[in-house]
Picture 1 (cartoon, rainbow, N blue to C red):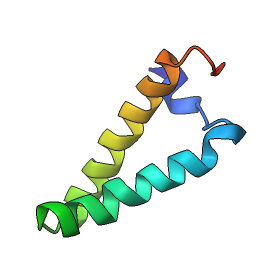
Picture 2: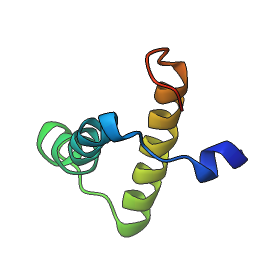
Picture 3: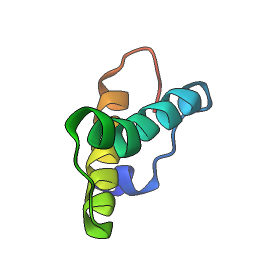
Picture 4: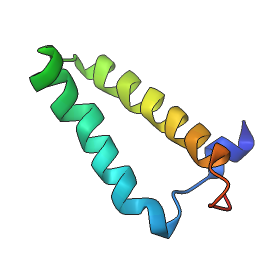
Length: 65
């Protein structure tokens, strides 16, 4: 848990992170699914995305996190 709280996105993955974050937070819910989140829904959506992205980075053998 401490490693998740103190991790940062590697420099070579920043653009990928921002692109995925924009897609998950704005494009997919609004335009593909047709829903809008409340403020709490946005926070939970961000936290879930961030945890999954952290797990994705930990499983990717090409990056040292």
